[in-house]
Length: 399
Ligand SMILES: Nc1nc2c(ncn2[C@@H]2O[C@H](COP(=O)(O)OP(=O)(O)O)[C@@H](O)[C@H]2O)c(=O)[nH]1
Ligand SMILES: Nc1ncnc2c1ncn2[C@@H]1O[C@H](COP(=O)(O)OP(=O)(O)O)[C@@H](O)[C@H]1O
Image 1 (cartoon, protein in one colour):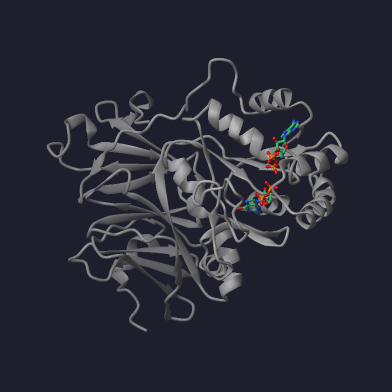
Image 2 (cartoon, rainbow, N blue to C red):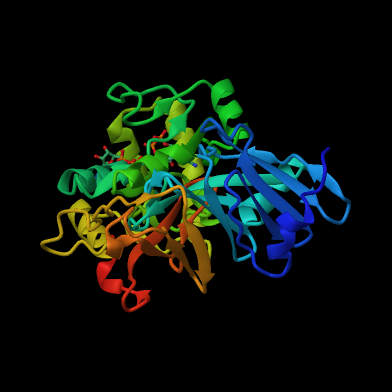
């Protein structure tokens, strides 16, 4: 327990201005709560601390803090967005590490608070620029998901990356750890799931499978479009998550053909084949669930199914490489001020001599934000503001 922040400290935002840069600590008011963000040891670049002052009870709360915490230098600004997350802009850092989001009231936070029965906040790193939507591919065992995905990865190596799942099942002969799956102990996987490291997980054919947050984010960090090969339960969980994806269900031409393929692959014992076939019937039913899959593809002739998959993904003749271009890095100085206009944040870096005269004012456009905790927050766009015309200059977009 401690004292409430001094009135002068809170004055501005209590008058309706939710911006405050105090160097070491910022305080943002959300409803009846004040979120105080700052380094405990401001002389070092310590990990940031978050405390909450509850105005109605007059008590301090130490929340459960999820996600990777940013290291704060002793200058940062904070802005409340949409009433459910706080944008924290670090001074003295460049644009691939200066934008962070502290989620305080998003659906993810609501879910976590129900799980923990405690006040929860979560950090999500902000990333400039965008990547195309991840692709979730589901379908019964033996339908040809892996075959279709390898064809895509071979034809478009720089465009797609595979989300490497964790599983407790034993590796097949040709499978490599870290490439096809992260083969894991059940106890380790269960403990990581408890720690919030997984985007989704499910028990499939008697084993535990799951997509870690990191598995998806490393692909996007590399500027690639992520492909997830997960079962229908996993697809449902991803639908409910912050990951905005395209959902494709692969269906067999007939149940007999599915059984034939599964047997011909010769990777499972008879008992495992029987289990997979039993589960296939339920999966084929669930694949038709309203609102779950955006596309259903029948994998009869492999080549024509692959052509249809490419069409769905917009891979017409001539498209061979990723469309993403990496944003230019920008250094933000320790001293800067921020103001919010609609979905844009104006960042004024002060003295013109610090930067080139034309580059000391930026606008951060947040209108296309995507993702969020437990993953990164993407879709941030940073523009140079031209001081002579005093408007956001779209031509100078840094991405
Ligand atoms: N929910 C979920 N399902 C997964 C994940 N990884 C793989 N699966 C699914 O688990 C099922 C079994 O996969 P696997 O053991 O590789 O066998 P296969 O489908 O017969 O090749 C398939 O339906 C996969 O789509 C995951 O991370 N999460
Ligand atoms: N359209 C197809 N026609 C015939 N065989 C196929 C077709 N698609 C895939 N296969 C074969 O079926 C088996 C199962 O395919 P796989 O990609 O491993 O399925 P999944 O990943 O969905 O379990 C493999 O031996 C594969 O070569």
